[in-house]
Amino acid sequence: MQLRKIILTALLAALTFVGTFFIKMPTPTMGYVHPGDAFVLLSGLLLGPLYGGFAAGFGSMLSDLLGGYLLYAPATFIIKAVTAIIASASIHQLQKFTKNNKNVVPVIIGSSLAEVFMILGYFVFEIFLLAFTASGSFTKASISAGIASSAASVPFNVVQAIFGVVIAIILYPILWPSLQKSQTE
Image (cartoon, rainbow, N blue to C red; front, top):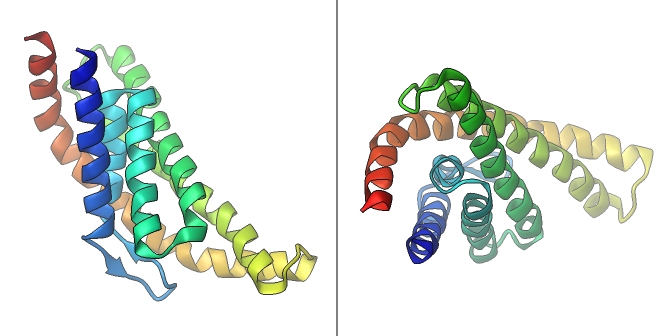
């Protein structure tokens, strides 16, 4: 049972990496939009908070490391791990409330809450990253510039979040029953 969970963690980390690193659309803000967030959400949904958080964080961080976004890698690990943890916790609480694992409403709500955290997490991180890289210190002017620059990436993070939620909504009902069946064998 434990070996199966470790293998699934590695698989979802790899899928997160592939969905983030290889399938991407560049944005004018020097970033990119990708479907990797679907696997971040599915990591939390299918593996729970601990293993899912690790798979999501590691797969996403690896994409940053290999893609040349080294400054983002530590923040990405934390933001994506917490995104998966929020998805896992909120969806499982909502499923207990609805008493139905097949109901898609908890997946929509929980995934959306998790992606709101992702958007806010990168917004705050980029404020400080851009403020510091612009002036080498945190002054009122550099933080204001960081806020303005960081705000430019929010719409693209929203698009990425929407794609992630939609793909997770489509894949979760397909993957969950087969995962449950394999765990009972």
